[in-house]
Image 1: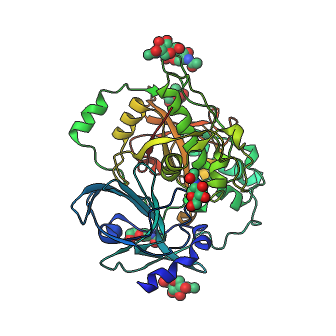
Image 2 (image 1 turned 90 degrees about the horizontal axis):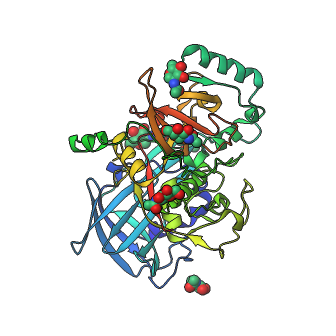
Image 3 (image 1 turned 90 degrees about the vertical axis):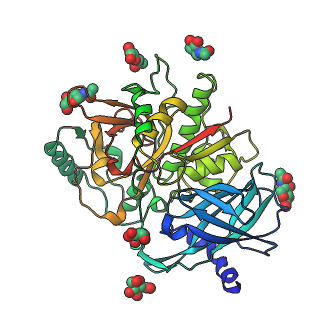
Length: 450
Ligand SMILES: *[C@@H]1O[C@H](CO)[C@@H](O)[C@H](O)[C@H]1NC(C)=O
Ligand SMILES: *[C@@H]1O[C@H](CO)[C@@H](O)[C@H](O)[C@H]1NC(C)=O
Ligand SMILES: *[C@@H]1O[C@H](CO)[C@@H](O)[C@H](O)[C@H]1NC(C)=O
Ligand SMILES: *[C@@H]1O[C@H](CO)[C@@H](O)[C@H](O)[C@H]1NC(C)=O
Ligand SMILES: *[C@@H]1O[C@H](CO)[C@@H](O)[C@H](O)[C@H]1NC(C)=O
Ligand SMILES: *[C@@H]1O[C@H](CO)[C@@H](O)[C@H](O)[C@H]1NC(C)=O
C-alpha cells in the first residue's frame, strides 16, 4: 500500500506525454478502489492522494458489467488505452492507468491507476480515489514515438508535397490530392499537432464489433444517404473552423458535436458557438495543445464542468491561463462510446446514432497522404512514407454518409477543423464499411442539455 501512495506524486509531469497502453484484458478483473473523503466539490485537486477513508471492491467483467462488493450491478468501459470509467451504485469513478517514463521508454502498469476522481451521479459529492487490481498484470514497455521529436526539425517543402500529390493522383481515381498551401514550411512537430497531437496517439486500437442480424436489419431501414448539412434544406451543422497549429482537434470535434446536437434537439433554434479554447486551457481531462479525446471532453468535461461559449473565451490556438469559467455553461446529460463501451462500435451503430440523434465524434489515423486531400472518397494509399509510430488519432465530426452511384463506393461525410480552404469546403469524405484508417472503431455520442 505505502508503495502505491508514494508513486503518485509524479502525475503532472507525466501526463503531458503519450498515454499508457492498457487493454480490456489487462484491466478486466477484481479491483479495490481506495477513496478519500467525499466532502468535496468539483474543484477537488486529485494530483496527489491524501488519505484513504473508504475501500470498495469492484469486479469489472465482460463486456461492460461492473459489480461491487454489495452485489450492485453497474457498467464500465476502457477509456481508449489510457484508463477506465466505472459507474456502480450511483457513483462514477474515473482514473488514468499508471505509467512511468524513462527517456524513450513508457512502462504501463495496468493493474493500478494514478489518483482519479469519483463523484455521485448527481455531481454533488466528490472524492479522489486510486485503484489497485487484486491480481498483478506484468508491466508493459513501449517506445515513446515522439521522444526524439523537437520543435525545430525538418520542414515540409513544396517540392516534396508536389511529388506526393502527383503520386497520389496517379495511383488511384477515388480521391484527389492538392498541395495545401498553409502546410508548406511547417515542421514535423507542427504537423503532428495539426494531425492530433502526441497525446492522441494510441498504442493499440480496437477493431469494430460484429453487427448482429437484428442490428443489420435496423440499419437497413435507414435512408441510403443522409447529411446533417441538408435535411430537407436545413443545415444543422455549425460552421467549419480552423484549429491552427495547436493539437486541439479533439476540442473542435467535441464542441462541434455539442453545437450540432443542440441544433438538432431544438429544431435549429439554439445556435451557439462553443469555446475550444476553454477546453485547451481549462480541462484536466485532456492535454491542451498536445491532444486529448472526445469521450473525456464532449462527454465527461462538458457534464462535470460545462462548455462555455466562444465569446467567453475566444480561440487563440495556444495554451494559456484558464479564464472565463464564470460565464454561462452548456452541459452534457449523458455520454458514451457508440455501442455502449470501448470496442463495441461498428458502421451500423454509427449510422443509427447519426441519423436518429445527430453528428458524432470520430477519430481516425492520419497518414501523410491524407494531409493534402482535396476531394473525393479518401482511402489510405500507402504513399508518403510509413512510420506507424507517428500515426496519431485525429478527432473530427461525422455529419453524414452516402454512396457514389457510379462506383458503388460507400462513404462517410466528415467535418474537419483545418479551415474552409482545406478539402471539400472544410469537409472530407472517407471510405465507409471497411474501418478505413480506424474510423469505425471509436465513435462517441453525447446528449447536451439545451
Ligand atoms: C468548492 O470547494 C472549495 C473548497 O473546498 C470552496 O472554496 C468553493 O467555494 C466550493 N465551490 C462551490 C461552487 O461550492
Ligand atoms: C527501454 O526498454 C528496452 C526494452 O524493454 C530496454 O532494453 C532498455 O534498456 C530500456 N531503456 C531505458 C532507458 O530504460
Ligand atoms: C499495446 O498492448 C497490446 C496488447 O498487450 C499489444 O498488442 C501492443 O503491441 C502494444 N502496443 C505497443 C506500441 O507496444
Ligand atoms: C439540399 O438537398 C436538396 C435535395 O436533396 C437539393 O435540392 C438542395 O439543393 C440541397 N440544398 C443545399 C443548400 O445544398
Ligand atoms: C422545424 O423547423 C422547420 C423550419 O423552420 C419547420 O418547417 C418545422 O415545422 C419545424 N418542426 C417542428 C416539429 O416544429
Ligand atoms: C463518383 O465516382 C466517379 C468515379 O470516380 C466520379 O467521377 C464522380 O464524380 C463521383 N460522384 C460524386 C458525386 O462524387
